[in-house]
Image (cartoon, rainbow, N blue to C red; front, side, top):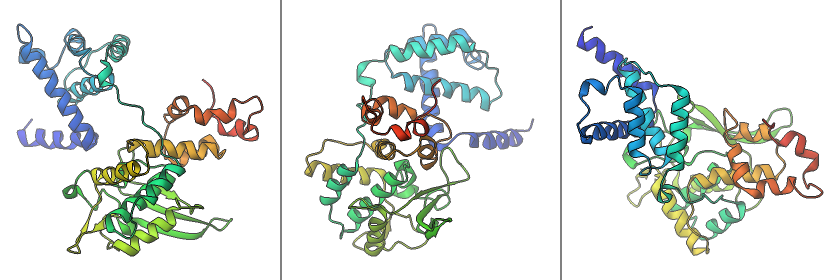
Length: 339
């Protein structure tokens, strides 16, 4: 096969993985080769690809106790992706692999475990908003982004960008991707939709949405204020904020979390993490008695993966386990099926 043809195939195959996934897998591949180089004697290049099951399990055993289980799992699958990309044989027994990955997770050092992600609540968001100056461009953008992410049960990364220079109109949500319907469906209810051009789970795009809410966390009021203060152009990042020179700057995740945690600290709230927004959204909707499948649809989960939130946060389950369940009329439709 000609080199140029092979390169075209490799370029095409590389699109099978999301950019962030490729970065993680690349790190895993580096660690794998570093391990092979440092072993005594070093593992010959010819034995690294295709790698034998023995070498792959040896690699996991050598790294166990140093990395978290999830990190090692990603590194391992990075090596597998490298085999797939280059058409190399992958011959690993699934049963042994599952056991090995379970083992490395249990051997992970305590320092590798992330602190519990506390959920955002409407009270927390209200207190954060009270400690932001919503007449200032950055604060207006941050609060609008926070309320939209929360009420649409979205990932924070779907409404922010990793860095200012990484904004890509074909991949990141813009002002022109917002559509407002003040009377949707037969019930004529208001809903605002956000087309996300690209997400990790939907490379061709998907739609997030919310409806107006009562009180200070209302995403409609926050979005309106943001547009009044920053007025991003149709092609600008949705939550872009206007700098002193008039240039609209895309809102980065780092800027967002810095302002949120500064406001939270001023309100006497401990450090928060971005994923806690989505967890808190699930908490809020479930406590309203919203059916399980509806919450899954709001958050655009394609599986029951978010039931992990139910197991981790007793607050969600509390209404269902009382002597006289508070949400008893909703239990049959709101709770997931048992397995």
